[in-house]
Image (cartoon, rainbow, N blue to C red):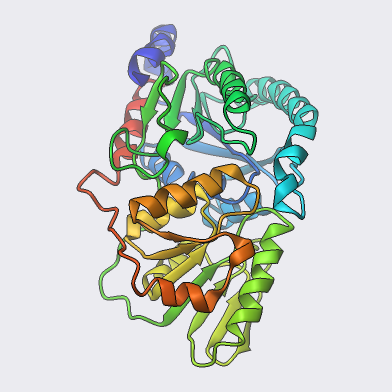
Amino acid sequence: MVISKLSYFRKKKSKYLSTYAQVPKKVLIVPLDWGLGHATRDIPLIHELLNAGCEIVIAAEGKHAALLAAEFPRITMLPLPGYHIRYSQKGFFFGLKIIRQIPKIWRAVRFEQAWLRKTVAELGIHAVISDNRFGLYHPDIPCVFISHQLLIKTPFGGVTERLLQKINYRFIQRYTACWVPDFAGEPNLSGVLAHPPQLPAHTTYLGCLSRFEPMPGVEKKYDLLALISGPEPQRSNLEALVLSQLRQMPGIRALIVSGRPDEAARQDVAPGITQVSHLNARDLNEAMLAADMVLCRSGYTTLMDLAKLNKKAILVPTPGQSEQEYLGKYLMQKGYFYSLPQHQFSLKKALEAVKTFPFAAFQHGQDMTAYKTVVRAFVKTL
């Protein structure tokens, strides 16, 4: 359990407790720069830490920093380079291109280790929450690793996946706790990714981690909400497909959100079709509720948002990204969402198919705010 693992740090500081308790606990949050999902799913955690009286410091760069700075303008933002993974134009070569960049990832991990030691000493950080960044553990303070990929899917199957899982667990075990944004039992959103036969010993499931909330009385405005996200060049590839096909569908009411938080643009691209570069959390929450159907990648954070709001969706996994391809197939088999590969993408056919697809609601009576209990328990150990 997280509490037993963290009790060491509480005892270590007990002789200073009378003074220490008066000082806000300073928590460093660092999301992985692998799509915006790692940043957006940290937003509810940050809110809960703020509610618990913590002082938050965020380390990020680029559009991740822009998104979090817009949501939390008063929070200290530190520049920290990401892993800067480059992606292939063709999905078939995705796995090979990632493997070729492992040395670059390793160098980034070593850099963030040195950076963290310096930052903890200079800023007096009390705890770290790393969203899937491997080098942000420290021997003297509690450090949490967040991941829904305990088993990492690859295009090459079993042997490669088992090897990557061993490497993954070696890093996870260096952290004080491992938080998994999903439910421990059935039903769940991640399948075998976060429910492998063997778990790290200090794993805690957070439940659904979404910044969105159901809101009654939202008027239906759109037949389709298209959420364009993910790494380049595939983000732009999907955007081009959606735009070209929507223009050939007169009468449809659609909103396209391009997933560019570092820009500010809005335009009407055709009658009834509007494109925006980015929406803040509240506006995107309302847009999802105002749409009959959502079209999006099968990125894990987006899936949690859809589940929280009980929305129907068409999933288009990022080509070659084994995790998203697995999630698309898994969740379609469960009946939660409709999924099709990008190379077979036809918006007209997909919208016809979902009319008869037997969507099953993911809502299952479990607590959709379970993460709040975990966060509050964590703060009490600091």
